[in-house]
Length: 376
Image (tube, rainbow, N blue to C red; front, side):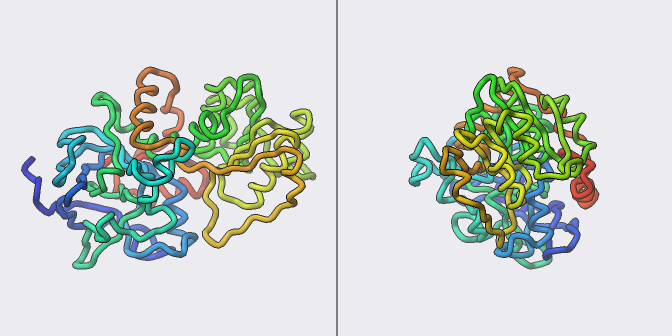
């Protein structure tokens, strides 16, 4: 391609600091170095995790930074040593890479990777540099991806090649929301047919959990949210009933216990609120209930609960990106979508250009959107 090996000037949404609106800037994106890939982003989703950074909840983030971690695009060029990708390939950047060599990658029970920048937040690629500059200043990368930009550069272990016919304005959800929620149900919890489930939080990830519970054959799927406007969509996607904690004068776990003969088989917390996490644990059946924490809490949050809650058999675990080994499994999820195993259309409520990204975040904060896709 004509741009291969050259610096590309393009538009990006730069976050200059916490509690500031994102700024549309012209940036320079350097060519990929060895084992790196430069991607033209086509579609990018707005996720609550990005808003945590803007709000200042993740204290170790470095600024300025280009956020975004859920996207789909097309390979523009590749660096030396990249053998499994070429210009023109459709791809999904991976906020959890898969190096294939570390202890996590070699363990079939883990989908994390030592090369991930999640929770380290160095803001750099594997060679400890960034490919972004703006106004003469280096701009940091966000969790191996940075997708609120027309072009990004990622390490080749942080990108998955997908089906050439995949619709990029739909499958971008595999980069975070859908993979996380759906996998939390079918891979982490391993929801069984005929079981009962409760999902706390009915945003894009929570609704993806509901889809996973439905595909797995759960008989009762209860959605919980303080925004009743989300109930219709939750039921459309598979929830059998929805409840609002504000409608009751007693703890929600007591209400759920009454509804499910003592507690649900599977509980999912998809908000990032430590109080709700404890409620989710308490709402699971005391003898064998399983609770999966999916939401990301603020970096200074701590969780406190009575250990007796778990002594009789409850299980508490976490889910990052649904437990999928990303380079291996994300392309398979795209194939499953194309084979109509599940639908994604119901998760996408708004489409905006990059220039209106701040409007997209306002829709998220007001609870008026499920997923807003930025069309670059």
